Image (cartoon, rainbow, N blue to C red):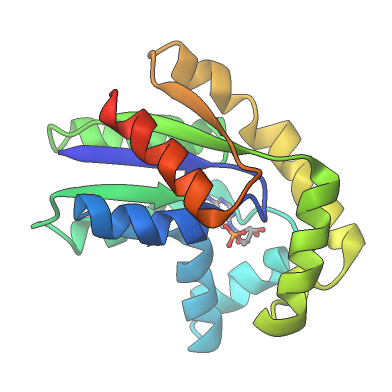
Length: 190
Ligand code: AMP
């Protein structure tokens, strides 16, 4: 079983690459951002709560996010493995994920961070915002706040996973195919 975590700031290409890795390794792709957006679209209570944070570029509270993620893993008991995209984003989410997986005799195989400079990411996100309709992609101050959240809360997870020998990073600048190739080569060496 392969269970991967994809890290990277907003716009780093996590969703794009996850879609490829999911096919190649037969994994279930779980994106917490997509799950929140699904709930917003369907006007659930969870969606209403999440929207109030997402619209500001803030993280949704941990317990709500953890509960949603665990429910989604439980919905896929036959999975050959998972690719977690946008989760964990905080230390308590990382610990909750480890405990949850351990309870199922599962574990994270590796975490991979897609690295790119902020200015390139802002440009990508503003372009995406023109077509995606995502309000959090249309305003540079909200984008910068999402980077701040990443720097403050998610970047420290690097040392958490380094402590488990599970942290890798990949240059996220290049064509989609080039980055896919870098990821494939890295996963082959795991
Ligand atoms: P994403 O699609 O991964 O860029 O996520 C969009 C937004 O959803 C984020 O800016 C957060 O507001 C929220 N979100 C997604 N995943 C998480 C998470 N693991 N923890 C807290 N908030 C999250």
